[in-house]
Every structure is written in C-alpha cells, then in structure tokens.
Amino acid sequence: MRSMNKRNKAVVLGVTFAVAATMLAGCSAGGAASSADKAPAKDADSALRGMLPADIKEAGVLKIGTEAFYPPFEYLDADNTTVIGLDMALFQAIGDELGLTVDITNMAFDGLLPALDAKRIDVVVAAMTDTKARQAKYDFVDYFLTGQGIVVPAGNPKSIKGIEDMCGLKVAALEASTQVSLLEKFNTEECADDPIVVTALATDADAMLQVRSGRADASFSQDAVARFNAQAEGGSGKFEIGNDEPLLPVVMGPMFAKEDSDLRDAVKATIEKLIADGTYKSILDEHDLGSGAVTEVTVNGGTL
Image 1 (cartoon, rainbow, N blue to C red):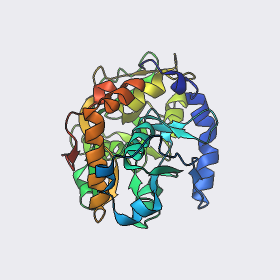
Image 2: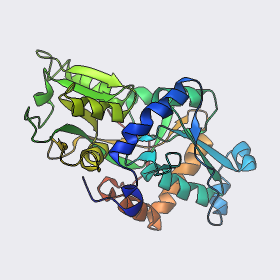
Image 3: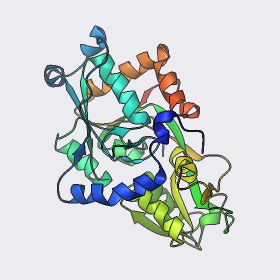
C-alpha cells in the first residue's frame, strides 16, 4: 500500500475488523451511526450557493449517506465514530464552498439507495462506481478514476495476477457492489468454463477476513481499497496485491436522485472550482490518491 498520512495511520485494518460487527448490528436494527455535524469552515461562494435547491439552502445542511468500512474512501477515525477518508474530505470542502453543514450518516451499504429514495439523505457518498445500470435511476457526478484490485495472501500461493487467474477459485467481495457484478460477468465470459465461487459479504472487512482465514483465495475490490487493506497495520505481511496495474478503470462519484438535478449541478460546479483552485489536488494528495484525479468532471460518464 501507499504511505498513509498521519490521520490515516490512526485507523488500521484490525480496528476496522473489530468495529464492523458492532456498527452493522446497529444498522440492521434500523439505526444508523452519524458523525458529528461539520460546519462550514469558510465563507461560501455566493454564485455556487445560489445554485442550490431552496430547501437545502434554507436548511443549511447537506445530508450524505455512506458506509464507513471502505478505506481510504470512507472509514472510521480512531474514536470509532467519526467518518473520515477521501470522500469525506472532498465533501467537507464542497460544504464549505456551498455554505452548508455536512451531516454524515453511516449505514449498511445495501441501505444507502433506499435511504436516498426515501429522502432521508440528499446524496450517497460511498465510492460508488458509475454504471449504466445505476444511471437508469440515479445521476452521478464523476470526480475520481479507479481500477479494481485483487487482494491475495502473502506470497500469492495461487499465482493470481488477473481476471482469468480467478477462474475456479473462491473470491470474496462487498455485496451489492460493482465488484460482485463484475465477478458474475466474468463467470459468463472469461470464466464460463470454470466459474469463480463468489462470496458476497456485508463489508469489505468481512471479505478480507475470508482471505485471512483461508475461506477465500482472494478479495476483489476497488484498487485503492485493495492496496489500503493489503498494507494497513494488521494486514502488512499477511496480504499482497495480485495485479501489477489496476484492472478495468472506471469513474466513480456521489449519487443523486434524478429529480435532484439542481443539487447535482451545484456539486458538479463546486468540484470544478476545487479542481481549478488546487484544493481538489491537495485533498487527493493528502490521501495518497493523486493517481485517480480527473481533469474533467462528468455527469453519468460511466460506460460499464
């Protein structure tokens, strides 16, 4: 994994494993863990703020939903409550520009879209891959480019380097994720004669536990997540990345309800400003994710 900044060092793979069961238990019971509200740290950009829907502008709050077990994009700080990561840092900067308090609710991954549909949150911010299937109902603002990664036990005993090498093996991934969809797609194409045994789990940490225990030969996730998990303290020396380069690069970003085009466009314009003034690059670099920077922000640019 890339080197971690000081804030990232406080959160390690072992902590993620330890808190996962507690957090999910709360979510399954209908609850959701929420971070403390983060008030804007600077004066708002009046032009960007003017693009906001009237109800959000009046409330002064942007409610985002996430699943905080997907480092380095979103995960829990050392207090096991505060949600941090690349997406959270970007949205704090977005909130600052829009003059909005950012309210973060951590919930189970498969509860995010229902929460958006029910208007309990304004936007899903959870390293969601922009796909054609998701575009049918939701809009994306694509602000990051990511590939896929394969986590294997140290020494890579099954010599897994790419897609074809996973055929016939046991591979774990986050349920309801693009990675599960990709694995299923591989089973109709590259691995049709020797299908991958896919195990879909509630969190990416659960998928890593499958590899750690030998119940899975590999874990399949976004490349940045895979590299974080493989090298985080608690994982260092136990895992490695099978693929030399990220596989199947795709765009990702926050998701909005189709009817929330004003909010979508305000966020898009804000990200464009953050790119132009260098804030975007600084935030990505702080999280060692500069390689995923985009130069153009698109709406529904995914082609997967």
